[in-house]
Length: 262
Image 1 (cartoon, rainbow, N blue to C red):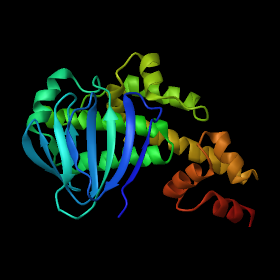
Image 2 (image 1 turned 30 degrees about the vertical axis):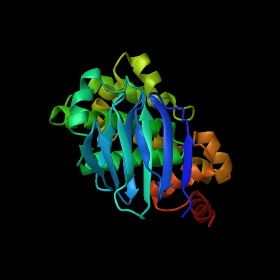
Image 3 (image 1 turned 180 degrees about the horizontal axis):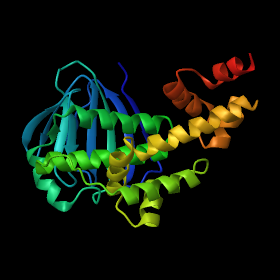
């Protein structure tokens, strides 16, 4: 089986690189990164030593490797391939005092962490920067809980959540990044996401997507073509619109438009 590698740099704060790879025989020698590494194994398993201590990364877990700490890696089952997805995040993404705990506990056995990391990759594959940014903030919070042994935060700020909702309502078609909202509202991104989710029962990116789908429905009823509607309401392209339209309404924009004409 030939090795396959795909890497790119998305326009998401703190996210320096994304890597998707499948290897059969390749073994990484001891090396370090200047970034935090969030590793998700899709198939197979990887054996690695972090600071000379042995570990195994498997599909049921997420692995967090700290910056500037030596590690290696190879398939845990000789002759069997492993497929992985990796997020490389700059060294300021987590505080310096998180390095020690991440060396001691690099394996995160929490279904919510794995699910959220997969959400980040799904958003990146679909070109949804705001969703990727929001889900990445949630990953950051969950990993802080893992490293510090903390219970999930219930911090809420309803007035702040309402201000963020107003900001999103003003930018339905143009969009806004979490970093821009953070500067405008003078609040940390993680506090914004937590407060909004607590106040309204869904994260800010999902609220914005719902508003865009609502607007798309009206434009389709007015007779516009799905490709025109996708761009007009702020989606990346027609495929991006279709993915979210089907998720919300259970049908495609084209089928919705044809049904409305009948």
